[in-house]
Image 1 (tube, helix red, strand yellow):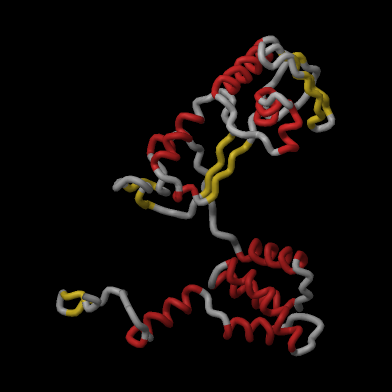
Image 2 (image 1 turned 45 degrees about the horizontal axis):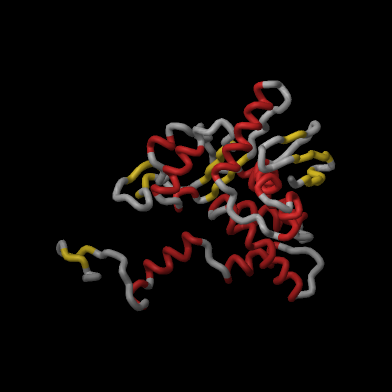
Length: 254
């Protein structure tokens, strides 16, 4: 028999006789993973500090799930689902999507939030294409949130927040110009110019970033559109150019 005491979020719970599965506890808020570790290891909660977490056996997971389900039926417990956020979800392959599909069927599955910027693209591990690179059966389980491009006022507000976070003093005219650049190019490019403009202002020993600083870094650092146009204009001067160029039905790159 092993008795372990621990505090989780300042609330104590007691795990007693882990071999028989007898668990006694007071009111608490717990994380299932931490609970499973304490229940699976002979040293109880000390395994969390020693790093001896290892692999939790399926029998232990099932035992914990059954006990939590029993508490829920008796009104002693309430399941608060966690949140699993996966960015760039199109990078997952078909096996990962199959795992997610099955995991979402579990009653204690977390809330799944995924994000991607892909359109119609190939599902990794297959030769099939689908919206966002996500299998249709999984996509049908999701609530798709529509997004809209930022307005000029929203871009201005975001840039103001970034200037404040980076402790960059900027004149009103410079903010107006930076907002205009963000509208015509991209928000990320405009955000990158904040730090670069501050360095340009520091070099000329100025106190506030002015229009000349923003214009200076705008000339030095290209955005995606200008860089792409530059590559097209001078593609013959670059090595290993692979841009398809049709000439009498023949690909010049070949």
